[in-house]
Amino acid sequence: MTNPHVKESAGVGTTCPSLLHRIKAMEPAAWERFVVLYGPLVYQWCRRSGLQEADAADVGQDVFRAVFRTVATFRHDRPSDSFRGWLWTITRRKIIDVARRRDASPGDGVGGSEMLTLVQSLPDEDTDPTASDPLVGRGLFGRAVELILGECREEIRQAFLRVVVDGQRPDVVAESLGLKVNVVYLAKSRILKRMREEFAGLLPAELLSASAPRLRTT
Image 1 (cartoon, one colour):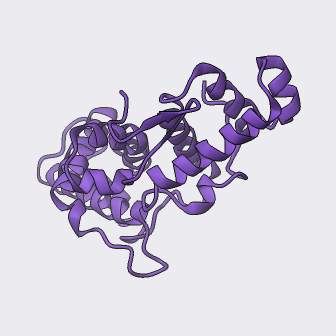
Image 2: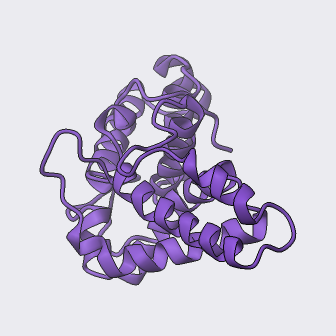
């Protein structure tokens, strides 16, 4: 879906308000992008915490409903504050709610005291349990890239993926795509800038840098 705030320029969109700003403004298109970005991570947290697939999917829905109600309260006042830590706090509480219901009436799969034992091992609130997992960072980076590249012309998309994601030389990429080298450099610069603008406050700055994790996203 095309971002209504994006203006196409030389194959690379530009934007003013960040995605975080737009979800706080309750823009439906922004919420779709947000769920694409963070839905898989919330599901992964739930599964790692011992939830079955169906429960993990249900908790994910509960988490995003809670985010919808409370995202306006999110603040980044301290260096230690992070959106992922805030989102984990919400997810952790929803997982605990499931454990308490299972303790009251255990069913199939993990339930009752076994579920509560798993919950006791959950990381503390505001502590993203996957913060040091490079695969999680690559997953977030890949989804962020795809959200931005969906607004670009195909040759610009390919130039960015080959240079930033695959690590190919810009001159080689330019020749293979029939582009000028300066167009490849400009595409890389503008897309990374767009990503920093779009995901400010949602993703750590180091994840959106030119040295971000390499991952072929398609």
